Length: 99
Image 1 (cartoon, rainbow, N blue to C red):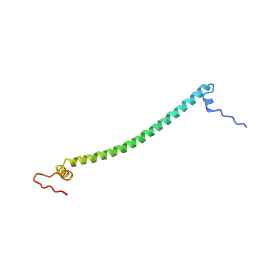
Image 2: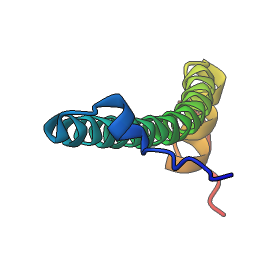
Image 3: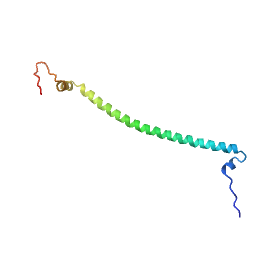
Image 4: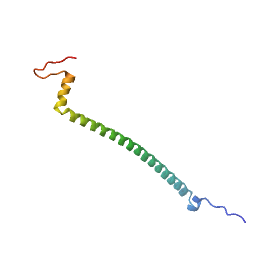
């Protein structure tokens, strides 16, 4: 009982044309290359997206802190306190105290 030798897949698909076999291999290799490159590009975009999300979160926290600071600086009592402490200003008819 002899085993029948199987013919290769490409010879079964394209029995009379070696050109079509080569063309088929080139198309398959190109498809694999394009799919691999697309997956790599997709991965890079995902990494960039996560980095930008973190940066956005940080910037929103910073914006919130600056808005709080701005709100505080709009209060006249805070402005007066800063003027007295940082600049040493005094009101009219007040005796300045030097530390």
